[in-house]
Length: 469
Image (cartoon, rainbow, N blue to C red; front, top):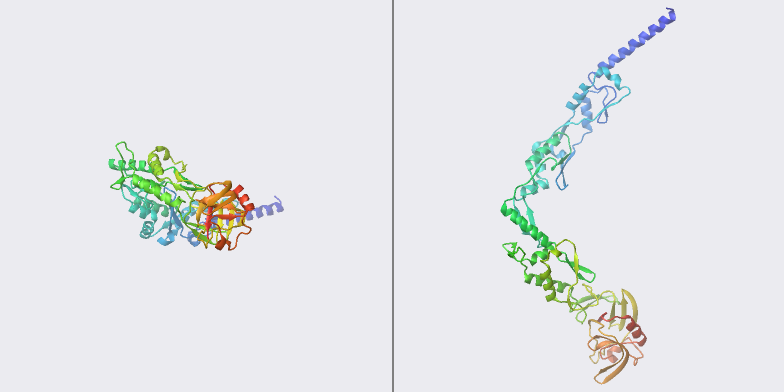
Protein backbone atom coordinates (compact mmCIF):
# COMPACT_ATOMS: atom_id res chain seq x y z
CA UNK A 1 0.00 0.00 0.00
CA UNK A 2 1.66 3.22 -1.09
CA UNK A 3 1.78 6.43 0.88
CA UNK A 4 -1.00 8.17 -1.05
CA UNK A 5 -3.45 5.35 -0.51
CA UNK A 6 -2.74 5.32 3.20
CA UNK A 7 -3.43 9.04 3.44
CA UNK A 8 -6.69 8.69 1.56
CA UNK A 9 -7.84 5.83 3.79
CA UNK A 10 -6.94 7.81 6.88
CA UNK A 11 -8.93 10.80 5.64
CA UNK A 12 -11.98 8.63 5.03
CA UNK A 13 -11.75 7.18 8.54
CA UNK A 14 -11.47 10.65 10.01
CA UNK A 15 -14.57 11.78 8.03
CA UNK A 16 -16.56 8.74 9.15
CA UNK A 17 -15.57 9.36 12.74
CA UNK A 18 -16.67 12.98 12.40
CA UNK A 19 -20.00 12.04 10.90
CA UNK A 20 -20.63 9.46 13.61
CA UNK A 21 -19.78 12.03 16.23
CA UNK A 22 -22.21 14.54 14.67
CA UNK A 23 -24.89 11.84 14.40
CA UNK A 24 -24.67 10.83 18.05
CA UNK A 25 -24.36 14.41 19.27
CA UNK A 26 -27.60 15.34 17.43
CA UNK A 27 -29.30 12.14 18.60
CA UNK A 28 -28.40 13.10 22.17
CA UNK A 29 -29.62 16.67 21.49
CA UNK A 30 -32.98 15.49 20.10
CA UNK A 31 -33.48 13.04 23.00
CA UNK A 32 -34.99 15.77 25.22
CA UNK A 33 -36.74 17.67 22.43
CA UNK A 34 -38.38 17.21 19.06
CA UNK A 35 -36.54 15.77 16.10
CA UNK A 36 -35.29 17.47 12.96
CA UNK A 37 -37.91 19.14 10.68
CA UNK A 38 -40.77 18.64 13.15
CA UNK A 39 -43.80 20.92 12.70
CA UNK A 40 -46.82 20.87 15.03
CA UNK A 41 -49.92 22.93 14.30
CA UNK A 42 -47.84 25.07 11.97
CA UNK A 43 -45.12 25.74 14.60
CA UNK A 44 -41.46 24.75 13.93
CA UNK A 45 -40.48 22.52 16.87
CA UNK A 46 -37.03 21.12 16.04
CA UNK A 47 -34.91 20.84 19.20
CA UNK A 48 -37.57 22.48 21.38
CA UNK A 49 -38.80 20.91 24.59
CA UNK A 50 -42.42 19.98 25.28
CA UNK A 51 -42.74 22.99 27.60
CA UNK A 52 -41.39 25.38 24.99
CA UNK A 53 -43.68 24.10 22.26
CA UNK A 54 -46.68 24.04 24.60
CA UNK A 55 -46.07 27.66 25.53
CA UNK A 56 -45.73 28.69 21.90
CA UNK A 57 -48.87 26.81 20.82
CA UNK A 58 -50.89 28.33 23.66
CA UNK A 59 -49.78 31.80 22.60
CA UNK A 60 -51.57 31.14 19.29
CA UNK A 61 -54.63 29.48 20.82
CA UNK A 62 -57.81 31.45 21.48
CA UNK A 63 -60.93 30.25 23.22
CA UNK A 64 -63.26 29.10 20.42
CA UNK A 65 -67.04 29.35 20.12
CA UNK A 66 -69.10 26.18 20.39
CA UNK A 67 -72.15 25.96 18.10
CA UNK A 68 -75.20 23.85 19.00
CA UNK A 69 -77.43 22.92 16.05
CA UNK A 70 -81.04 21.84 16.62
CA UNK A 71 -83.28 19.67 14.46
CA UNK A 72 -84.49 22.62 12.39
CA UNK A 73 -80.93 23.76 11.63
CA UNK A 74 -81.09 26.71 14.04
CA UNK A 75 -77.70 27.51 15.57
CA UNK A 76 -76.95 28.60 19.14
CA UNK A 77 -73.49 29.80 20.17
CA UNK A 78 -71.56 29.66 23.44
CA UNK A 79 -68.30 31.62 23.71
CA UNK A 80 -65.89 29.44 25.72
CA UNK A 81 -63.97 32.57 26.68
CA UNK A 82 -66.90 33.28 29.00
CA UNK A 83 -66.68 29.93 30.83
CA UNK A 84 -63.01 30.00 31.97
CA UNK A 85 -61.67 28.11 28.94
CA UNK A 86 -58.23 26.55 29.51
CA UNK A 87 -56.17 24.53 27.03
CA UNK A 88 -52.99 22.47 27.45
CA UNK A 89 -51.04 20.66 24.73
CA UNK A 90 -48.58 19.10 27.20
CA UNK A 91 -49.88 15.52 27.24
CA UNK A 92 -50.35 15.34 23.49
CA UNK A 93 -46.90 16.85 22.86
CA UNK A 94 -45.19 14.44 25.25
CA UNK A 95 -46.92 11.47 23.64
CA UNK A 96 -45.79 12.63 20.21
CA UNK A 97 -42.24 13.33 21.39
CA UNK A 98 -41.97 9.79 22.71
CA UNK A 99 -43.10 8.43 19.36
CA UNK A 100 -40.01 9.99 17.78
CA UNK A 101 -36.77 7.94 17.90
CA UNK A 102 -33.91 10.41 18.41
CA UNK A 103 -31.54 8.04 16.62
CA UNK A 104 -33.65 8.16 13.47
CA UNK A 105 -33.46 11.93 13.06
CA UNK A 106 -31.73 11.45 9.70
CA UNK A 107 -35.05 10.20 8.28
CA UNK A 108 -36.29 13.78 8.54
CA UNK A 109 -33.44 15.36 6.58
CA UNK A 110 -35.45 15.23 3.38
CA UNK A 111 -38.93 14.63 4.84
CA UNK A 112 -40.82 17.01 7.12
CA UNK A 113 -42.64 15.56 10.11
CA UNK A 114 -45.94 17.43 10.39
CA UNK A 115 -48.63 16.79 13.01
CA UNK A 116 -51.84 18.46 14.14
CA UNK A 117 -52.56 18.05 17.84
CA UNK A 118 -55.62 18.98 19.89
CA UNK A 119 -55.20 20.35 23.37
CA UNK A 120 -56.70 18.99 26.54
CA UNK A 121 -59.49 21.43 27.43
CA UNK A 122 -61.08 22.33 30.74
CA UNK A 123 -63.84 24.84 31.51
CA UNK A 124 -65.72 25.95 34.58
CA UNK A 125 -68.64 23.50 34.53
CA UNK A 126 -70.96 25.79 36.49
CA UNK A 127 -70.24 28.69 34.12
CA UNK A 128 -70.79 26.39 31.14
CA UNK A 129 -74.16 25.31 32.55
CA UNK A 130 -75.22 28.92 33.12
CA UNK A 131 -74.32 29.79 29.51
CA UNK A 132 -76.17 26.68 28.31
CA UNK A 133 -79.29 27.48 30.35
CA UNK A 134 -79.37 30.98 28.85
CA UNK A 135 -79.73 29.61 25.30
CA UNK A 136 -83.14 30.19 23.70
CA UNK A 137 -83.82 26.54 22.83
CA UNK A 138 -83.14 25.51 26.44
CA UNK A 139 -85.53 28.12 27.82
CA UNK A 140 -88.16 27.22 25.22
CA UNK A 141 -87.89 23.54 26.09
CA UNK A 142 -88.18 24.27 29.81
CA UNK A 143 -91.37 26.26 29.19
CA UNK A 144 -93.03 23.70 26.88
CA UNK A 145 -96.10 21.94 28.16
CA UNK A 146 -96.21 18.14 28.00
CA UNK A 147 -99.56 18.06 26.20
CA UNK A 148 -101.44 19.02 23.04
CA UNK A 149 -103.37 22.30 23.09
CA UNK A 150 -105.65 24.09 20.65
CA UNK A 151 -105.94 27.89 21.01
CA UNK A 152 -106.48 31.02 18.89
CA UNK A 153 -103.46 33.03 17.80
CA UNK A 154 -103.16 36.82 17.75
CA UNK A 155 -104.79 36.98 14.30
CA UNK A 156 -107.72 34.84 15.43
CA UNK A 157 -106.84 31.61 13.63
CA UNK A 158 -106.79 28.29 15.46
CA UNK A 159 -103.27 27.21 16.38
CA UNK A 160 -102.08 23.79 17.57
CA UNK A 161 -99.31 23.39 20.13
CA UNK A 162 -97.56 20.01 20.13
CA UNK A 163 -95.88 19.46 23.47
CA UNK A 164 -95.23 15.75 22.89
CA UNK A 165 -93.11 15.61 19.75
CA UNK A 166 -89.47 16.60 19.30
CA UNK A 167 -88.75 16.94 22.97
CA UNK A 168 -85.13 17.64 23.92
CA UNK A 169 -83.46 15.80 26.79
CA UNK A 170 -81.76 18.89 28.22
CA UNK A 171 -79.48 17.04 30.64
CA UNK A 172 -78.32 14.66 27.92
CA UNK A 173 -77.69 17.61 25.64
CA UNK A 174 -75.61 19.35 28.33
CA UNK A 175 -73.48 16.28 28.92
CA UNK A 176 -72.94 15.99 25.16
CA UNK A 177 -71.93 19.66 25.10
CA UNK A 178 -69.47 19.14 27.96
CA UNK A 179 -67.96 16.15 26.16
CA UNK A 180 -67.36 17.91 22.86
CA UNK A 181 -65.85 20.90 24.64
CA UNK A 182 -63.42 18.64 26.50
CA UNK A 183 -62.58 16.86 23.24
CA UNK A 184 -61.75 20.15 21.52
CA UNK A 185 -64.71 19.96 19.11
CA UNK A 186 -66.72 23.03 18.19
CA UNK A 187 -70.10 21.74 16.95
CA UNK A 188 -72.84 19.77 18.67
CA UNK A 189 -75.70 18.43 16.54
CA UNK A 190 -78.56 17.64 18.91
CA UNK A 191 -80.26 15.20 16.55
CA UNK A 192 -77.10 13.26 15.71
CA UNK A 193 -76.28 13.11 19.40
CA UNK A 194 -79.62 11.45 20.16
CA UNK A 195 -80.95 14.28 22.32
CA UNK A 196 -84.52 14.17 20.94
CA UNK A 197 -87.34 11.95 22.19
CA UNK A 198 -91.13 11.63 21.86
CA UNK A 199 -93.95 11.35 24.43
CA UNK A 200 -96.69 8.86 23.50
CA UNK A 201 -100.12 10.59 23.34
CA UNK A 202 -103.14 9.14 25.15
CA UNK A 203 -106.56 8.69 23.54
CA UNK A 204 -107.88 12.16 24.40
CA UNK A 205 -104.73 13.72 23.00
CA UNK A 206 -105.07 11.71 19.80
CA UNK A 207 -108.66 12.96 19.44
CA UNK A 208 -107.54 16.56 19.81
CA UNK A 209 -104.76 16.05 17.26
CA UNK A 210 -107.23 14.59 14.74
CA UNK A 211 -109.57 17.56 15.30
CA UNK A 212 -106.66 19.91 14.60
CA UNK A 213 -105.99 18.17 11.28
CA UNK A 214 -109.58 18.91 10.23
CA UNK A 215 -109.32 22.53 11.40
CA UNK A 216 -105.98 22.98 9.63
CA UNK A 217 -107.51 21.73 6.39
CA UNK A 218 -110.53 24.00 6.80
CA UNK A 219 -108.35 27.04 7.53
CA UNK A 220 -106.45 26.43 4.28
CA UNK A 221 -109.08 28.19 2.18
CA UNK A 222 -108.53 28.63 -1.54
CA UNK A 223 -111.13 31.36 -2.10
CA UNK A 224 -109.55 34.64 -3.22
CA UNK A 225 -111.97 37.52 -3.82
CA UNK A 226 -111.23 39.43 -6.99
CA UNK A 227 -111.96 43.18 -7.00
CA UNK A 228 -110.57 44.34 -10.33
CA UNK A 229 -106.79 44.12 -10.02
CA UNK A 230 -106.97 43.73 -6.25
CA UNK A 231 -107.06 40.35 -4.52
CA UNK A 232 -108.51 39.63 -1.09
CA UNK A 233 -107.90 36.06 0.15
CA UNK A 234 -110.08 34.41 2.74
CA UNK A 235 -107.51 33.92 5.50
CA UNK A 236 -107.12 31.26 8.17
CA UNK A 237 -108.34 33.76 10.75
CA UNK A 238 -111.42 34.48 8.60
CA UNK A 239 -112.18 30.75 8.40
CA UNK A 240 -111.78 30.36 12.15
CA UNK A 241 -114.31 33.16 12.71
CA UNK A 242 -116.84 31.30 10.54
CA UNK A 243 -116.91 28.28 12.89
CA UNK A 244 -119.44 27.88 15.66
CA UNK A 245 -117.43 27.23 18.83
CA UNK A 246 -118.23 25.71 22.19
CA UNK A 247 -115.78 25.65 25.10
CA UNK A 248 -113.17 27.11 22.80
CA UNK A 249 -113.42 24.34 20.18
CA UNK A 250 -115.30 24.18 16.85
CA UNK A 251 -118.62 22.33 16.92
CA UNK A 252 -119.16 19.38 14.56
CA UNK A 253 -122.46 17.82 13.52
CA UNK A 254 -123.29 14.11 13.58
CA UNK A 255 -121.56 13.65 10.23
CA UNK A 256 -118.37 15.25 11.47
CA UNK A 257 -118.84 18.46 9.47
CA UNK A 258 -118.12 21.79 11.09
CA UNK A 259 -121.14 23.94 11.99
CA UNK A 260 -120.88 27.39 10.40
CA UNK A 261 -121.85 30.60 12.18
CA UNK A 262 -124.11 32.26 9.60
CA UNK A 263 -124.03 35.62 11.37
CA UNK A 264 -120.22 35.60 11.32
CA UNK A 265 -120.20 34.80 7.60
CA UNK A 266 -122.68 37.61 6.92
CA UNK A 267 -120.54 40.01 8.99
CA UNK A 268 -117.49 39.05 6.92
CA UNK A 269 -119.33 39.81 3.67
CA UNK A 270 -120.47 43.10 5.19
CA UNK A 271 -116.84 44.00 5.97
CA UNK A 272 -115.84 43.21 2.37
CA UNK A 273 -118.61 45.45 1.08
CA UNK A 274 -117.58 48.28 3.37
CA UNK A 275 -113.98 47.97 2.19
CA UNK A 276 -114.53 47.57 -1.55
CA UNK A 277 -117.99 48.87 -2.48
CA UNK A 278 -117.71 52.14 -4.39
CA UNK A 279 -121.34 53.22 -4.37
CA UNK A 280 -121.90 55.96 -1.79
CA UNK A 281 -118.22 56.08 -0.87
CA UNK A 282 -116.37 59.28 -0.01
CA UNK A 283 -113.33 59.45 -2.28
CA UNK A 284 -110.03 61.29 -2.38
CA UNK A 285 -109.27 62.44 -5.92
CA UNK A 286 -106.05 63.94 -7.30
CA UNK A 287 -107.25 66.70 -9.58
CA UNK A 288 -105.52 67.94 -12.72
CA UNK A 289 -105.14 71.35 -11.11
CA UNK A 290 -102.92 69.72 -8.48
CA UNK A 291 -104.84 69.40 -5.23
CA UNK A 292 -106.56 66.46 -3.58
CA UNK A 293 -110.35 66.77 -3.59
CA UNK A 294 -112.71 65.03 -1.17
CA UNK A 295 -115.81 64.00 -3.11
CA UNK A 296 -119.01 62.60 -1.64
CA UNK A 297 -122.08 61.21 -3.33
CA UNK A 298 -122.83 60.44 -6.94
CA UNK A 299 -124.30 57.52 -8.82
CA UNK A 300 -121.06 55.73 -9.65
CA UNK A 301 -119.70 52.68 -7.90
CA UNK A 302 -120.23 49.02 -7.35
CA UNK A 303 -122.43 47.52 -4.66
CA UNK A 304 -121.93 43.92 -3.67
CA UNK A 305 -124.93 41.62 -3.42
CA UNK A 306 -124.41 40.73 0.22
CA UNK A 307 -127.14 38.09 0.43
CA UNK A 308 -125.78 36.19 -2.57
CA UNK A 309 -122.20 36.37 -1.30
CA UNK A 310 -123.23 35.16 2.15
CA UNK A 311 -125.07 32.24 0.53
CA UNK A 312 -122.03 31.54 -1.69
CA UNK A 313 -119.69 31.27 1.28
CA UNK A 314 -122.09 29.16 3.34
CA UNK A 315 -122.37 26.75 0.41
CA UNK A 316 -118.69 26.56 -0.51
CA UNK A 317 -116.83 26.75 2.81
CA UNK A 318 -117.67 23.14 3.66
CA UNK A 319 -116.69 21.94 0.17
CA UNK A 320 -113.34 20.06 0.35
CA UNK A 321 -112.60 21.41 -3.11
CA UNK A 322 -111.86 24.87 -1.73
CA UNK A 323 -109.41 23.62 0.90
CA UNK A 324 -106.69 22.10 -1.26
CA UNK A 325 -104.07 24.86 -1.09
CA UNK A 326 -104.60 25.97 -4.70
CA UNK A 327 -105.95 29.58 -4.86
CA UNK A 328 -109.24 30.03 -6.71
CA UNK A 329 -110.27 33.59 -7.67
CA UNK A 330 -113.89 34.48 -7.12
CA UNK A 331 -115.63 37.53 -8.61
CA UNK A 332 -118.48 38.52 -6.27
CA UNK A 333 -122.07 39.14 -7.32
CA UNK A 334 -123.14 42.79 -7.50
CA UNK A 335 -126.38 44.71 -7.15
CA UNK A 336 -124.70 47.61 -8.97
CA UNK A 337 -121.90 47.25 -11.51
CA UNK A 338 -119.03 49.70 -12.06
CA UNK A 339 -116.55 50.54 -14.79
CA UNK A 340 -113.69 49.52 -12.48
CA UNK A 341 -113.51 47.64 -9.20
CA UNK A 342 -111.36 47.89 -6.11
CA UNK A 343 -110.57 50.64 -3.66
CA UNK A 344 -109.60 52.97 -6.51
CA UNK A 345 -112.63 52.23 -8.61
CA UNK A 346 -112.32 55.42 -10.67
CA UNK A 347 -109.33 53.80 -12.31
CA UNK A 348 -107.25 55.53 -14.97
CA UNK A 349 -109.97 56.11 -17.60
CA UNK A 350 -112.44 58.81 -16.59
CA UNK A 351 -113.88 62.25 -17.30
CA UNK A 352 -112.92 65.01 -14.89
CA UNK A 353 -115.17 68.06 -14.58
CA UNK A 354 -113.53 70.88 -12.62
CA UNK A 355 -116.37 73.34 -12.09
CA UNK A 356 -114.25 75.93 -10.34
CA UNK A 357 -111.81 76.12 -13.24
CA UNK A 358 -114.62 75.45 -15.75
CA UNK A 359 -112.46 72.81 -17.40
CA UNK A 360 -113.17 69.27 -18.49
CA UNK A 361 -110.56 66.56 -19.08
CA UNK A 362 -110.74 63.06 -20.44
CA UNK A 363 -108.08 60.54 -19.38
CA UNK A 364 -107.71 57.19 -21.07
CA UNK A 365 -105.45 54.63 -19.38
CA UNK A 366 -103.79 57.46 -17.51
CA UNK A 367 -103.09 59.57 -20.62
CA UNK A 368 -104.78 62.95 -21.09
CA UNK A 369 -106.70 62.64 -24.36
CA UNK A 370 -108.90 65.73 -24.27
CA UNK A 371 -109.01 69.09 -22.51
CA UNK A 372 -111.63 71.79 -23.01
CA UNK A 373 -113.31 74.78 -21.41
CA UNK A 374 -116.95 74.28 -20.43
CA UNK A 375 -119.95 76.03 -18.90
CA UNK A 376 -121.73 74.34 -16.00
CA UNK A 377 -124.93 75.13 -14.06
CA UNK A 378 -126.02 78.70 -13.36
CA UNK A 379 -125.00 79.53 -9.82
CA UNK A 380 -127.08 82.74 -9.53
CA UNK A 381 -130.26 80.82 -10.36
CA UNK A 382 -129.26 78.00 -8.01
CA UNK A 383 -128.93 75.53 -10.84
CA UNK A 384 -125.31 74.67 -10.06
CA UNK A 385 -124.09 71.34 -11.40
CA UNK A 386 -123.98 68.88 -8.48
CA UNK A 387 -120.73 67.44 -7.19
CA UNK A 388 -120.13 63.70 -7.04
CA UNK A 389 -118.69 60.76 -8.89
CA UNK A 390 -121.20 59.73 -11.54
CA UNK A 391 -120.95 57.80 -14.80
CA UNK A 392 -121.99 57.97 -18.45
CA UNK A 393 -125.11 55.82 -18.49
CA UNK A 394 -126.17 56.46 -22.08
CA UNK A 395 -125.00 58.01 -25.38
CA UNK A 396 -127.32 59.57 -27.95
CA UNK A 397 -127.09 61.79 -31.02
CA UNK A 398 -129.48 64.50 -32.18
CA UNK A 399 -131.56 64.87 -29.04
CA UNK A 400 -133.82 67.73 -27.96
CA UNK A 401 -133.29 68.48 -24.32
CA UNK A 402 -136.48 69.75 -22.72
CA UNK A 403 -137.25 71.39 -19.45
CA UNK A 404 -139.46 74.12 -17.96
CA UNK A 405 -139.43 76.88 -20.52
CA UNK A 406 -136.82 75.46 -22.90
CA UNK A 407 -136.19 72.91 -25.66
CA UNK A 408 -132.54 72.72 -26.74
CA UNK A 409 -131.50 70.58 -29.70
CA UNK A 410 -128.01 69.00 -29.33
CA UNK A 411 -125.89 66.85 -31.58
CA UNK A 412 -124.31 64.75 -28.84
CA UNK A 413 -125.81 63.79 -25.50
CA UNK A 414 -124.19 61.81 -22.66
CA UNK A 415 -126.32 61.79 -19.47
CA UNK A 416 -124.41 61.19 -16.23
CA UNK A 417 -126.93 61.74 -13.42
CA UNK A 418 -130.67 61.81 -14.00
CA UNK A 419 -131.34 64.66 -16.47
CA UNK A 420 -127.87 66.14 -16.07
CA UNK A 421 -125.37 65.30 -18.76
CA UNK A 422 -122.57 66.43 -21.04
CA UNK A 423 -123.57 67.88 -24.41
CA UNK A 424 -122.64 70.35 -27.08
CA UNK A 425 -124.12 73.86 -26.92
CA UNK A 426 -124.22 75.41 -30.39
CA UNK A 427 -125.94 78.52 -29.01
CA UNK A 428 -122.82 79.48 -27.07
CA UNK A 429 -119.87 81.28 -28.61
CA UNK A 430 -117.75 81.37 -25.46
CA UNK A 431 -116.90 78.83 -22.80
CA UNK A 432 -114.98 78.86 -19.55
CA UNK A 433 -114.23 81.73 -17.20
CA UNK A 434 -117.03 83.00 -14.95
CA UNK A 435 -119.89 82.50 -17.41
CA UNK A 436 -121.45 79.83 -15.21
CA UNK A 437 -121.84 82.25 -12.32
CA UNK A 438 -124.58 84.29 -14.01
CA UNK A 439 -125.28 82.74 -17.43
CA UNK A 440 -124.67 79.07 -16.80
CA UNK A 441 -126.72 76.08 -17.90
CA UNK A 442 -129.70 74.42 -16.27
CA UNK A 443 -127.21 72.03 -14.64
CA UNK A 444 -125.71 70.26 -17.63
CA UNK A 445 -122.11 70.53 -18.77
CA UNK A 446 -122.08 72.63 -21.95
CA UNK A 447 -119.17 71.73 -24.24
CA UNK A 448 -117.86 73.13 -27.55
CA UNK A 449 -119.24 71.08 -30.45
CA UNK A 450 -115.90 69.91 -31.85
CA UNK A 451 -114.68 68.81 -28.43
CA UNK A 452 -118.01 67.15 -27.68
CA UNK A 453 -117.89 65.17 -30.89
CA UNK A 454 -114.36 64.02 -30.10
CA UNK A 455 -115.34 63.07 -26.54
CA UNK A 456 -118.49 61.26 -27.73
CA UNK A 457 -116.45 59.04 -30.02
CA UNK A 458 -113.94 58.14 -27.28
CA UNK A 459 -116.05 57.52 -24.21
CA UNK A 460 -117.71 54.21 -23.38
CA UNK A 461 -120.93 53.82 -21.47
CA UNK A 462 -120.05 53.26 -17.80
CA UNK A 463 -117.06 55.63 -17.79
CA UNK A 464 -116.74 57.47 -14.43
CA UNK A 465 -117.38 61.22 -14.41
CA UNK A 466 -115.70 63.03 -11.49
CA UNK A 467 -117.47 66.33 -10.83
CA UNK A 468 -116.28 68.84 -8.23
CA UNK A 469 -115.74 72.52 -7.44
